[in-house]
Image (cartoon, rainbow, N blue to C red):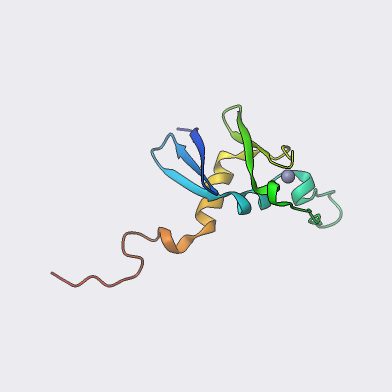
Length: 118
Ligand SMILES: [Zn+2]
């Protein structure tokens, strides 16, 4: 079953995503914007030189999600408060960002605490 984004809602400074596999993800808007996959944010490989990551000037409104659309059945395209909207986040990229963001909190119920044995 391909991964499909069912819902994307901004809650505070986070984007709450719900997926067709029943899972949810919460992504902070600021790192989400910084992870924008478009060429003007991440650079473009020319096949000769290593990718040079461009210097992007962010403003406070750069981290405000103004609106968003789904692209086909594979991507999520946000429009940011500064008008930037060329980044299309593939669904599996969004998932990856979520799991890369805070692995500590996703280890399970007890996060390394020891349970007293019964
Ligand atoms: Zn971008």
